[in-house]
Image 1 (tube, rainbow, N blue to C red):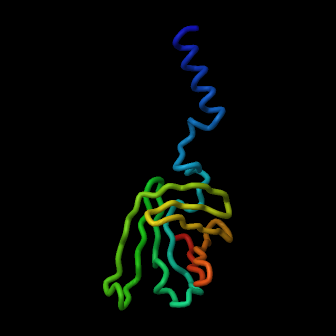
Image 2 (image 1 turned 180 degrees about the horizontal axis):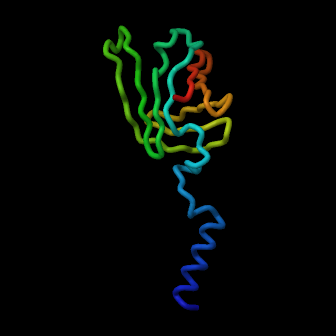
Image 3 (image 1 turned 120 degrees about the vertical axis):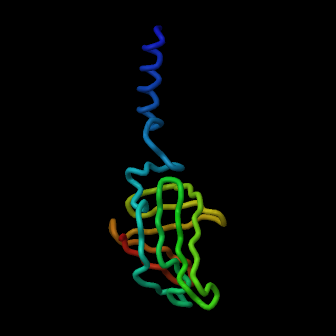
Length: 127
C-alpha cells in the first residue's frame, strides 16, 4: 500500500467511529445544548436563589459560574473551571467539574435546570 492510501484508509476509519469529530469528553459540542450563556430565571431551593449561580457560561473546555451577592459572599464571585462533558443528549448533560458531577436537564433548547435533590432546583434560561 502507498502511504497516501494508508492515510486515506485511516482517516476513513477514524471518521466512521467518530474520532474525527470535535469532542469534549464523550459528546460532540455541535449537539451539546449546554454550550452558551445562561441566566437564573427562578429557584425552588430551600434557601432561595442565593443557593444558585446567577449566571453560567459554558464553552468547549471551560465553564464560568457567577454567584450572586449575599451575606456570605458580599460582592458575589466569579469562578471559572475546566470542564469535561461526560454525556449529552437533547434533554440531559452531565458535566464533570472540580468537586464532582453536575446534571443539567432541559425542558427545551432555551430552558434548563439543575436539580439538587431534596434542596430544590435552580432554573435557567439561555441569554
